[in-house]
Amino acid sequence: MRKRHRIGLTLLTILVMGMTISQLVMCAGQHERPPRPWFDWEISPEEMERLRAILPLYFNVKAAINTLSSILILSLVVIHLGIYRRTGTKFSLGLVVFSTALLLYTIMANPLVHGVLGFRRIGFGPLLIVPDLLTLFASAVLIYLSRQ
Image (cartoon, rainbow, N blue to C red; front, side, top):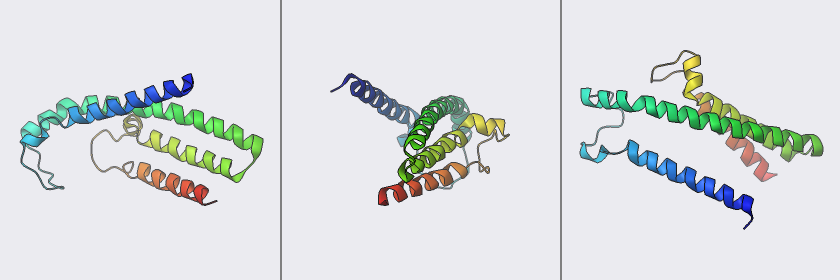
């Protein structure tokens, strides 16, 4: 296996392990409580204190991950633009559109952007649905490219 592939595989493994560990940490103690309905908006004072303690960490980690993703995907957009300029094929143009949609997704899903635009509280803001629409668009582009 080439050195570059080995490094990429190692980074991917570390990322997956980190995501798994963070999910386990976030869900610690969840099994002790009785199950609640999906849309039960009543929050006990104990749970509110737990949320106040963990949400800043969650938003900081999410902001860091989204910022790194934005940087990586921006480099993909630049690479795909270069390929499109050289080849001029529809497929490479589709990859540019797909990468741009993913870039917009990571930007719009970043809590820093939500804060800059004035949506500091948790809830249903207009930015909540935009990342999902961008994912839908990117998936449609990828399906279109796959069918060509």
